[in-house]
Image (cartoon, rainbow, N blue to C red; front, side, top):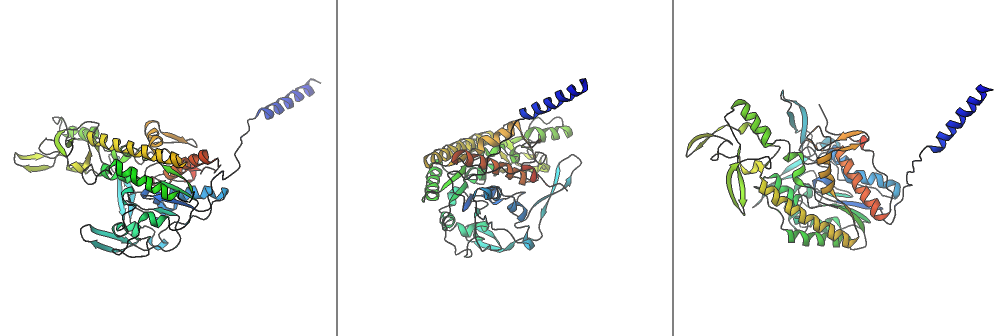
Length: 439
């Protein structure tokens, strides 16, 4: 009898545990108040799937809009067609491949130069040479164009100056005259994502403030208003992304002043500082000792440090004296960082204000990516961060994302859409997408 009672207690306990088991309620896929029948994406290189310093087929297939579109299929989303490179030209523009590591642990990257989709070079008087790519013909849902600024969307000759955009147009450079804004709105659509505006700050930053300019704040505001007005002209709904803190990416946080100086001091302990040519105000620059607040770019050739430079004061070591400072294009100095951040802040205020006025969803990429830099991110038990290569999110160029990074961004866009429109688009499984491809 005692044994029988024990069995009864055990069975009752198991039933009680079963009754207390928490339920996991996965919302049934639902489109909410949005229509995803024809979703289009507009934006720059991030939208196109650019990675590892180039646009190539594997990157295109893992672009964040294509991941979003795949998840939209369960809530009425239609076909999503991208201007893919063909299999025989899968390496597109060419890109960087990780081929090994040096004894000190620094990565070795090698350009991929085979199976490209380059069809020629077009000289444009007063501009320079434009690389032309194999033309794409057919439907397009992903209108991402590497290099495009908000500044370019209404500039008619732009189809002659950007080979990635020229590739999508029926005409050939230098005879194109279709603006980007007209091109993306030529066919009806029901829903859109927009992540334009990054390059209006990024180009200035990656050139160390020496090779590009920041788009004036008032001009950005006017153009963004025009863009969104046209995208919503027929009642379309959509989602927009804010502009990330461009100085938070590995491109500006991998080769540091402290690391370079430390390497120099191992060979010559008498060296006290690196010197840069830094912004004072306006267009005035002056040499000074570098600090941790000055950002050296990822592609800086560190072998230049200490090399002899002939000056009016004799031969002096590059980067180690006020007379031979590191060139402007290699450093985004503290004042240039502050200037960039001021413009990005203004751009994002514009984006949020116009999106609110039009009732659009907003993915706050600025806050999200800064949080990853500060705290990292755990997805499906995997720890990710903003570190170069090891972080898993950024590709070999230190600016664009890996497939895993694009999947993470796609999910953040989806969360914003679901919150705004009452939809329940399922999230992508980030574990299905890779980080940096190791040799």
